[in-house]
Amino acid sequence: MNRPFVHPYIPNTAPDVRAEMLDTVGAASVEDFYADVPADLRLGRDLDLPEPLVAEQDLARHVSGLLARNVPTTERLSFLGQGTYHHHVPAVVDEVIGRSEFLTAYAGEPYEDHGRFQALWQYQSLMGELLSMDVVNVPTYDGFQATATGLAMAGRITGRRRVLVASDVLPAKLSKVRDYVRVHLDLEFVDPVEGTADVAAIVARLGDDVAAIWVETPSRTGAVEHRLQALADAAHAVGAILVVGTDPVGYGVLTPPAEQGADIVCGDIQSLGLHQWYGGAHGGFIAVHDDPRFVMEMPSRLFGLATTDVPGEVGFGDVAYDRTSFAHREEGKEWVGTAAALWGIAAGVHLALMGPQGMRELGEVLLARTAYAQRALGAIPGIRLTDRAVHLREFAIDVAGAGLTASGIVTALRAEGIEPGVPAGEHELVVCVTETTSQADIDRLAAAVTGLVAASAAEAASTLDPIAEPEEHRA
Image 1 (cartoon, rainbow, N blue to C red):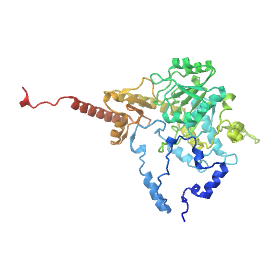
Image 2 (cartoon, rainbow, N blue to C red; image 1 turned 180 degrees about the horizontal axis):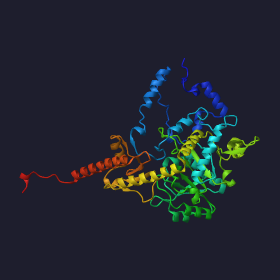
Image 3 (tube, rainbow, N blue to C red; image 1 turned 180 degrees about the vertical axis):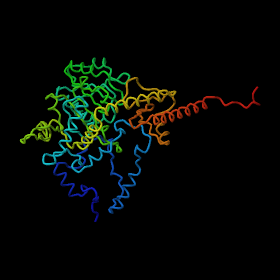
Image 4 (spheres, one colour; image 1 turned 30 degrees about the vertical axis):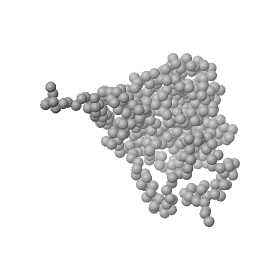
C-alpha cells in the first residue's frame, strides 16, 4: 500500500493537516492561493528537494555546508549597493538588540515590558529630528512596503489615481510598489534629465487627477534631487502630494525633504546600524507632519508619550490605535502585519550613538568618498559618468567606450577578490562606496578597471592592425 509522503519538517504535507487548513480558509486546493501568479512564472513541478535528514547532526552538517558557500562582503573588497549597504555597525548596537527584552521581531503588546515601547518611541523621536518631521511610525516590514504605503496614503487622501514618477527607481523597489498599489493607483514615468527630475516635463503632465509626485533621492544611481521645492510647489498647486522615497543616512549634511515641501517621506533604515546579512536587515519608515489628514491615514503603529495617574510618571503606548487594521480588522484601510520593530530599536541605538555631529560627519565622508570615486573612475579612458548630478554613495559609469561590458568587469574583477558593483544594463555599472570604503580601496578598483581597459584596447589593436611582414619579404 502506497502511503502519501509526509515531510518531517513540513507539517502541512500531512493529508489530514492540509485538508483541515484548506477547509478552514474555504479553499479547494493550494492552487487557489496562487491564482494571481501568471502561469509563465510558475515552476510547474515539485521542488527538487534532497531527501530529508532525520538525524540532527546530519542536518546541521548539511546546512553548514550550504552556508559555507556564502562569502560576506567583509571578506572581499565590495562596491555593492543597490538597496543593501555595507555601513559600519557599532558593537553596542548588536549588544543592545541582543538583550532578551528586545530580541523579537514584534513590536510588543500592552501586557509586555513597556521598555520596548519606550525604546521605539525614542527611535521615532530621533528619526523625526533627523528628518525634520513630526510623526514617524514603528518600522514596517521594509522600505519597499513603506514607499508603497506612502503612495497609497496619497491616493486615499486625494481620492485620485495618477502618480507621476520623477526619478529612476531601484527595479526591485519599483516591482514591489507596482504590485502593492496596482489596484488603486496608475504610475506614469517622467524620464529624469542628468540624473534628476525634469521639472518642466512633470509640470506639463500635472492635472487635477494627479494624486502624487513620487521622487527618489538618492535615486537608483545615487543622484541627489536638488529641485524638491519646485516639485512640491507644482504638486500643491493642483492639490497633489509630494512623496519622497529616501535613505536617511545623508541627512546629517543634506537638507531634509520635509524642509523642501515634502508631505510624506519614506524609505528604509538598513543604513542606520543594520548589517547587510546576505540581503540585509530591513525596516521601513513613514514620516509626516503633525496633520490629522496624514496621521490618520498611516496604517502602521505609532507609540506616544502620555502622563499616568501617578504624579511624575509617564507611560508609552499606541497613538490613535483606532485607525489601524488591528482595530478595524478586515475593514481597515490597509493591512499591516509583523513590524520590523527590532530593527527600529537598532536604528534608535545607532542614532543615539552618532548624535547630530556624528551624522553630519558621516554625511560629509559619504559625499567626499563618492566624489573621489567618481573622479577616479571617470578619468579612465573610455569610462564616463552617466550624469552630472551630485551623488551620495552610489553612481553609475558607462563602460561602452572602453570596449567592455558591465558583466564582463564583474566576472574579471571577482576573480581578483573585488566586487566592482551591480550591472544595470549591458554597459552600465552602478558603483557604491561607504564610510567603510577607503581611498586605497577606491584606488585599487580604479587600477583594476584601468588594467581591463588596457587589455581590451590591446586586444582590439591586435585584431585591427595587419601582421608585419618579415623583412626579407619586403620589396
